[in-house]
Amino acid sequence: MDLYYDLSAALRLAEHAAAAHEHRAYGMSAEAVPALVWGKSSGAFLNSSGLPIMSGIYADGLEGPEADALLRRTEVGGDDFAQPIPLQDPITDEHGTTMSTLEWLRRGQQSGMAWLVIEVDRTTYSLALEGPRL
Image (cartoon, rainbow, N blue to C red; front, side, top):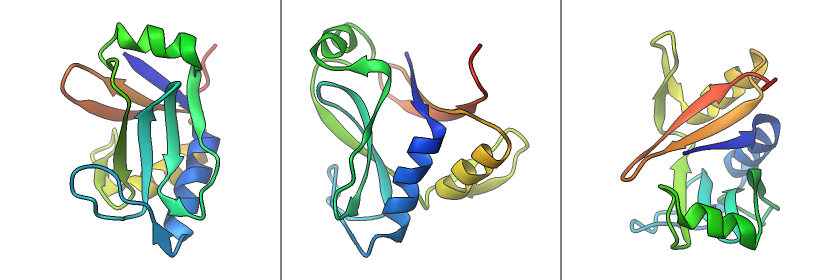
């Protein structure tokens, strides 16, 4: 399943996390780092780990109880969760260049990408950027 998040809004969340002096901890490691937080609760959301808390965003078309029912029948599953995506983690673009996740998001927006896509399968997820959908 592919979850589409508005890249401009996702980048605002990432910049908030990067600029924050304090962060909330998520996941098993409980390490508080600058991160986007991908999760499921009344839809598929994306938020910032930064404090103070900033309002998050939902995946395109996946907000509310109806979205939870739909997501329950997909690879995302029925349990609520919050998964940090650390902004300093390395990511490799389509040209083979490795950079931080934050820099990858910035470059994607600068090059005209419109969507941050979280591609979910049964055991893993990956990130991609896409241009405007027609």
